[in-house]
Amino acid sequence: MGYRDTRKAKRPPTLETYHEDWRVRHETRLAFANQPDNVAKVKSWCQQFSAELVITAQGNHWQIYRPIRREGIQDKKVLQWAEWWPRSAKLVLGKKWRQGVHTHDVEQLIHELTEFALREKR
Image (tube, rainbow, N blue to C red):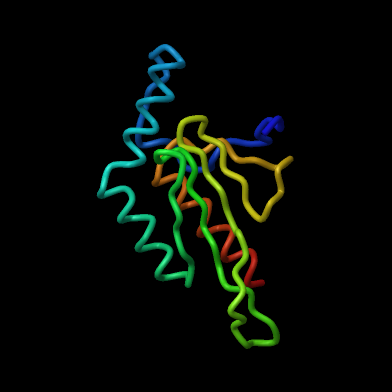
């Protein structure tokens, strides 16, 4: 990736692991994110916002796709709208790699995605 995050998520993390060694902290974040109830929360959010969640790399790469809309008509093509790496807590919205958001957990992820979706509608 190479680009440092420009800001932290606006919501405080649910999972606090600051006292742990960074290796343990990263594995803890990954395991917490991939718990079935947390994956279900993000899938539910995706349904509300006409998006699709794809999880790859043993749960370490979450990709959210949304349909491309043109003049009010939904196109069949999809846009990779957001990417999140739970282990490193990196969130990239709209392919803006240099404006990454440090996002520790699913609650922060959902908050950031919602804000981004609402900004996009304006």
